[in-house]
Amino acid sequence: MSKKSTRNTKGKIITAAWDLFYEQGYENTTIEEIIEESGTSKGSFYHYFEGKDALLGSLSYIFDEEYDRLQNELPDEMHCFDKLMYLNERLFSVIEERIDIDLLTRLYSTQLTTKGEKHLLDHKRLYYKLLRRLVTDGQKKGELTGDMTVNEMVKLYAMCERALLYDWCLCNGEYSLSSYAKKTMPMFLAKIRL
Picture 1 (cartoon, rainbow, N blue to C red):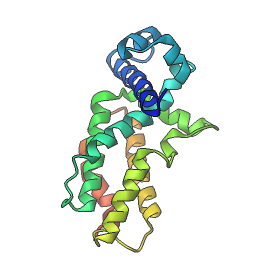
Picture 2 (picture 1 turned 60 degrees about the vertical axis):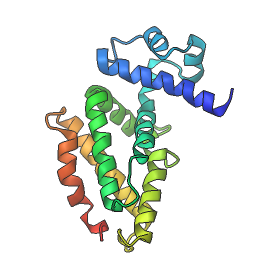
Picture 3 (picture 1 turned 120 degrees about the vertical axis):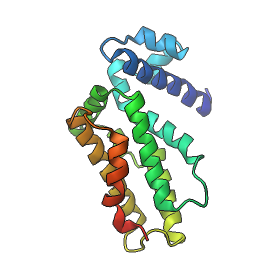
Picture 4 (picture 1 turned 90 degrees about the horizontal axis):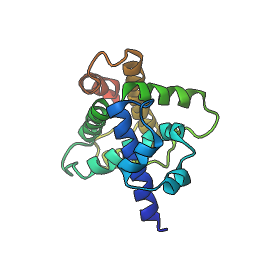
């Protein structure tokens, strides 16, 4: 099986699962429904996942899928800082629209207690690669500070996003995540902009 075919099959399963989790809840979604919705097979499902619980760690895949789509929307002439804020606003809108807050909370709690792979911190993800590319470009253009390294700025950005997501989960989604982030992210990251 080619790498692209593998990604497509796994991606179909993940996307179908998270759509069903959002529509009918995690507990009410069966593996059979995920297989049917994804148009894959039982063998494919179990090739990639041990069971439904294993899908909880796949949310980072959904995020990266969205970042992959969004990176093509960024105009070259847009200030790098504005690109970062745009990506944040769009991703948080997707989270509000497509991700059940209880599942997001569960994901964060598993990431805090797991001794194994921490998907959200995997620096090989498209998320981190895209952020590093944007920050590097911003420094070269003189749009972002040279007082911090690329990795320091990426870490700060990611930390701010996680803090906002954590608070939103803690408050059980009582406010608009994307609207609140639109106001606060520029304040949190003001020192990196030139």
